[in-house]
Image (cartoon, rainbow, N blue to C red):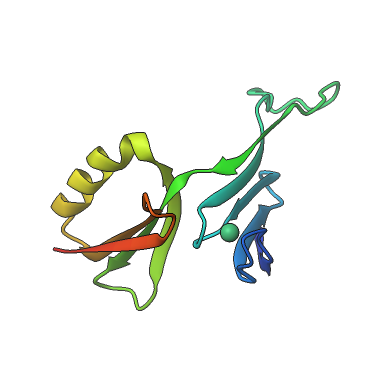
Amino acid sequence: MSSHKEFRKCNCGNPMMVSDYNYKEETLYEFCDVCSYYHTVAITNKPKDGNYKEWEAVYQEESGIAGIVLKIFKAESDGYEFCCIKKDVIRSVVEDLKKATDVVKFGITFKNKMGFYQTQIYTN
Ligand SMILES: [Zn+2]
């Protein structure tokens, strides 16, 4: 394994925000499955020829509130996968997941107009 996973506290109060650092790729992916906060760091200029001699890494950092937490339950696994997505792609993501044969059910969580978190469950 080339990644180190740990839990950190998110600003929303969730003590179990996933922080995944891949030390081989030098990427960081943090994601809160409550408020959809995300924080990613990645190197954008890895030399294609593998020559790192006079190379200096350029990091791209992004963070924000994505808007929607997606949880996917698959037939052959006990747990679930989750990630955050932005509202403008939700329709196509839902359509794709409805067609996916290995997906048993999935849920999307978002903050509704009243300011409460709301989860919608889809069963395939
Ligand atoms: Zn959070």
